[in-house]
Length: 116
Length: 112
Image (cartoon, rainbow over all chains, first blue to last red; front, side, top):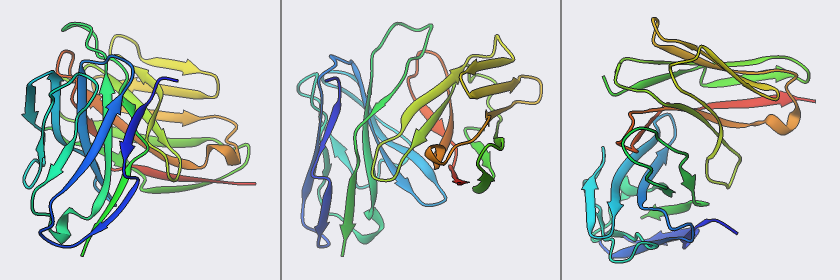
């Protein structure tokens, strides 16, 4: 089954304790991205990656890091989490089909993070 | 200029009625306008999408109406069903960027 898998689904942590949320896709998609979803704000892009070893900042990158060492994996790293990073996080992937036509984004199930 | 403004924030519709959600954008470089449907505890999933070379696209009970001059697009759900109760997000993107700008979401509740 084609899917984007995030782990963990739920996480409660304390301020300052480094954490990693994993994301893996089995569709051989080049493009992967991370979003955070907050009430009244919709989904905002944190980081994205067009391919292996190519990453760039989205709209709200502060406090986050990413890496793309393999095509299928795109982990999100919070080196020193703070309460304002309490949110619902989604990983998404898309195939890259050239500059002309955009394509559907496939989303994972989400990771609900609480930082106390 | 990057914003996509979505309204209403919430919507209650009787079963069999029409649900209408509206979005407006400023960036004329946007050329792909998808709608995503999200059920509680799930990630968003593509529902229907339109490109600005057409004014309307219909898939089953779901229709996107697109007004290029007004920079507005809307989702119409005909014969709304309780199973349509979900949060709906409009989005906009520019070809080649693969980056989506999402609206703030509309929580739809269809009463049985």
